[in-house]
Amino acid sequence: MTARAATDRKVTDRAPSDWRGATALVTGASSGIGRAVALRLAGLGLRVALVARRADRLADVVAEIQAAGGQALALPCDVRDLDALARAFQAAQAAFGPVQVLLNNAGFARQAPLLSGDPGLWRAMLEVNVLALAAGTRLAVEQMQAAGRGHIFHLSSMSAHRVPPGSSGMYAATKHAVKALTEVHRQELHEAGLPIRVTALSPGYVKTEFVHTLFQCDDAAAEAVYAGIQSLDPDDVADALIYALQAPPEAQVHDILLRPRRQQS
Ligand code: NDP
Image (cartoon, rainbow, N blue to C red):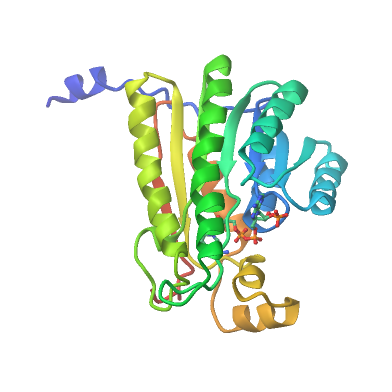
């Protein structure tokens, strides 16, 4: 290809995408990565709808955003209840306008080996990590079509890319499903000709409340776990999301794999 032909085929407007004033909905915004991303999006001028079960924790995040001059709304909801999830999307649209940015971040792991674990925990991980992500994406796409653009993020994991030894049963399978759903969403959005991007974020260890839930432990025990490993900060994941969000409109980041440098697997 000649240099001239390459230029002719270049359709990308190199200006960064600007999302100021757009509505974002973040699931799992009451702690960890979701909270960090919600704060960053609000700082960029987006209006942020916050979904999680713990209403008190969401209220704290709303207060933090508002104190910094941003706009946010708490929508307490268990994402396994798909009717409640749909009502949260409606409430976000009513308050701030159609959702243009979605972070499907609510998720968790529990120890539940496949040969001996509680199938109720398998079901819960599948419902939160996989089914709610698919349902939320569908709800968001309806609103993004009204807005004329959108960007969907799936909080995946390095556990979507390999199964670490000692994996907690169903968890790695849920994240492998998220990896597949990311590609299926990309294909369906492409087929439909919609100007909506989809991006997965695949971190390794991140210091959040993930370990509290995994081991059903208190702060001191979680600190001891994190003391023994190198972990990312939730803001490292927020940085990756912002990079993909602000990429020029025709550039679609598919997946970002990020580990702490000293994480072995
Ligand atoms: P946290 O435990 O700090 O955050 C999990 C969030 O998910 C909380 O806000 C929690 O809110 C929400 N959540 C869980 N279940 C539900 C539910 N049924 N309905 C609504 N919200 C729910 O952990 P992280 O920030 O680390 O986890 C965020 C995502 O990152 C998850 O998808 C996780 O799998 C992924 N991840 C985490 C890694 C890590 O090392 N920390 C590594 C790779 C991926 P509430 O309890 O208030 O409902």
